[in-house]
Image 1 (cartoon, rainbow, N blue to C red):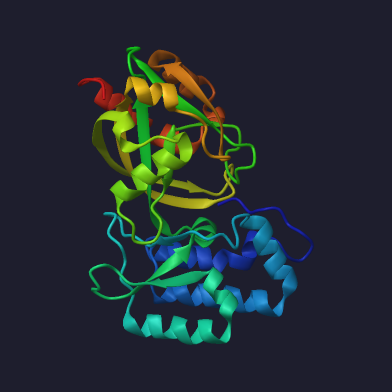
Image 2 (image 1 turned 90 degrees about the vertical axis):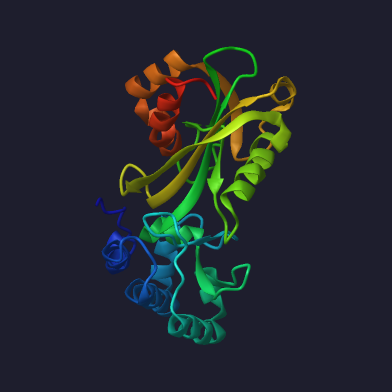
Length: 284
């Protein structure tokens, strides 16, 4: 693991090294030991402003509104023990800002509460969480697929090529709900704009340390489909997180991935093998 930049006596990864090690030891899942290390880091942040400032520099998403479920290696949501929930409730009542680190959630149907983890904390510590990835082929041009250029303000991989649609599964939302939400948010399209939608599979993707600042462990659900003619005409960079859209011939895309991998976000490069395999048995 590569250390982040030092800022005097603070700002090195050593401030949360114990947390990263605990999460790794827990299989990148939320358990009592990992939670305890989070609480210790939070306490250091409340005592020493320099630690909090260093944390914010290393976790640029700090304070964001997204909370993600911790999942196991099969993508199943972790249900935390009742005593851990009680511990969080007591600590959050004394320190409301701890609500920027965790949030309580109740599944539907109500089969026991669990804790969600702030997105920034997942990326700082390496908690496994779910994402959706969608490849979209052109409506009529064979062997052409849509690619987005990530916005320059993105915390990770700004300006790089990425999947046309991708995103985190927030809270306890379903994979399908997330897929269609991201389709509308990123391209301004309704579900009917995609024909032949099908699941390609799942895979775990880890980006730990340099060159990415994040300790990112994703359980990615990968899909592909083909834009309808109307969908192709209506697709746009609807989100400020999307700088532009591009159309690649598959041969050119595969060549660019091999020659200039640094120009591609890890989501596209990580899920591309599943998409390429699907191409050998028929287009999406």
